[in-house]
Length: 106
Image (tube, rainbow, N blue to C red; front, side, top):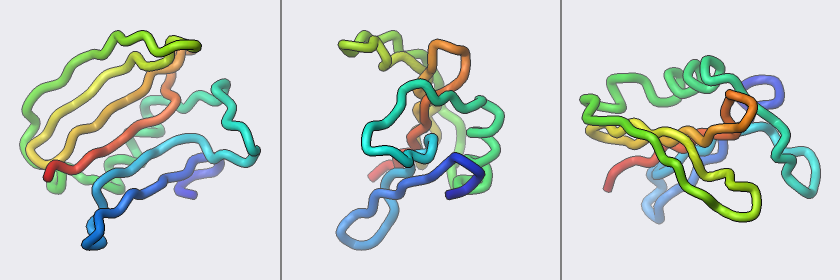
């Protein structure tokens, strides 16, 4: 838990290196609620603490994803590609974010 109601889940490679971080609402129930929305500013503040600019490397490009994933059509968002990581922000209909993913490049 990195903030009240917000957690970070790390995925590790076999060698113990972190390869992915998932920042999202802390799930306390068996079924994840899609109704929880985080602000862009709060997620960005967490990401700056976990993956500062020096760890990201040089900014390369960013873009938008307008994908339809049934049944909720909840795959749209934006991404930022850096020299060392890619960050994906999953958009919520309410104007905030559902979650963010940081993936390290191989």
